[in-house]
Image 1 (spheres, rainbow, N blue to C red):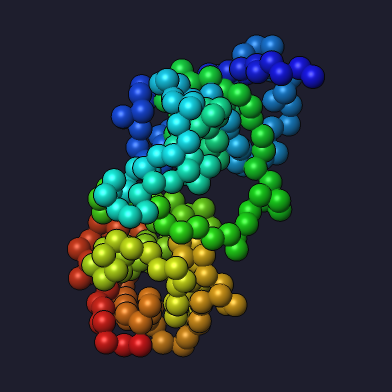
Image 2: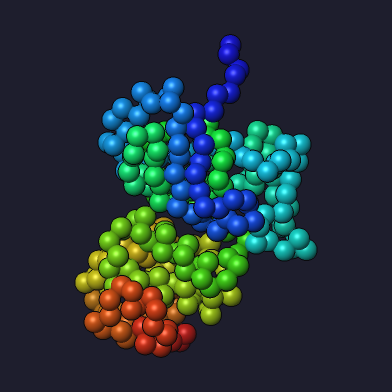
Length: 264
């Protein structure tokens, strides 16, 4: 059995170390070594890829329990086993990241974002299969919390756009409503199970809510005739009629929607 690990290329990124890496990664490329060029044949058939890399920065390979980023060390459930989180500390420091393949120039593959910093050795590339890798019914208990509202919004936008990629004004509206609920109503927490009512006549809004909350018609989602969204009993009514996607994201909350905690 050949146990030799071969690197196939390196990451090229404007991020030079772990401290400078945004929570969701940054635009990056993979430069493949010449000897692996034949492996790119027909890679354009796939919109997304799995990128596996050998994590740099001297990760601790003998540490099996850690406190994840965003979790207070004093919290009763702060400690997690490394197999329950994506910490770089693990027996074999292999990182895994899914990313949109934006284009290929010779031996350079351009991606929308990777959470590997510049010079990270790449172990392998595999296509993301929509029919096999998508598990919409998957469930995770939230670990930690975003560092600020901007980080939360970026995460919500990413989730919504991965489910419905059109930058529609109603997608932005759903993100603003969800952001407000998480921060102002739920104290940054995410419920174990969402209960959401959404207007039948606004499909982009419904799609965004499904992407962010992983709800479906058999699991927490109801469609109604009224032009309102209800998140865990809190009612949101759209207010910014005619706004564009960008305007909806930039406007003050009171110009985007009104809300009431009394409706159930």
